[in-house]
Image 1 (tube, rainbow, N blue to C red):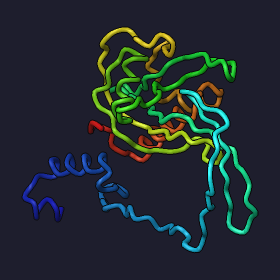
Image 2 (image 1 turned 180 degrees about the horizontal axis):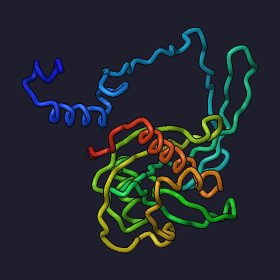
Image 3 (image 1 turned 180 degrees about the vertical axis):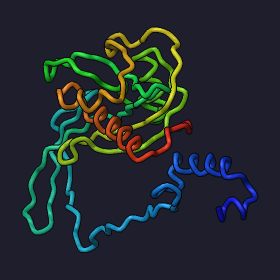
Image 4 (image 1 turned 135 degrees about the vertical axis):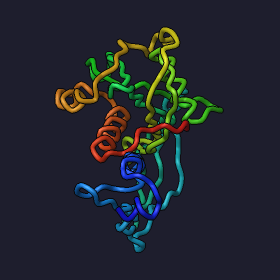
Length: 235
């Protein structure tokens, strides 16, 4: 009532504005008519009295265009120096594209390493001279034949931080246009729009493969559960 009077706006129009702000996570709704600006501050403080490991050198054991294996001479605080294996892989971009029916664009593929079929999101290696957002857009189109309307970066992570160096960047977008058949025959699989409602069950059945797929889909599901806005901004 107070806002309606102060802004000289009808209640119906005001409710529409408030609903949009809730959808965009600018405000939160409590009860039937109570709105609050959410506290997004981080309360967990990083400890300041811990020392990093000292790195004294690195020697390459194996190296090709796909993978590099090294032994790194490290010295943790209070521990004698030793050599630690490190596998260096490529920079990777993965994209979850959702349509207006709450379905996500996925591929049913066979992976020979685990010797199994499973659902994956499109994604792949970021080429030299290319940024991760460009790679994500390119990989979706090459592997599925669909061109995303837009993609938004949501997180960068390392899938096996203790021994493997391979930055994975996750993008999420809404909407795509069919522009042709998949052009990457080696990477392409059965293309399908999978209902987001099916994702938890597919996860239970072990049919979601790859950490990038899991991280991206968990982010999408968590955003839907909290009423977060759908990504609309191009990366």
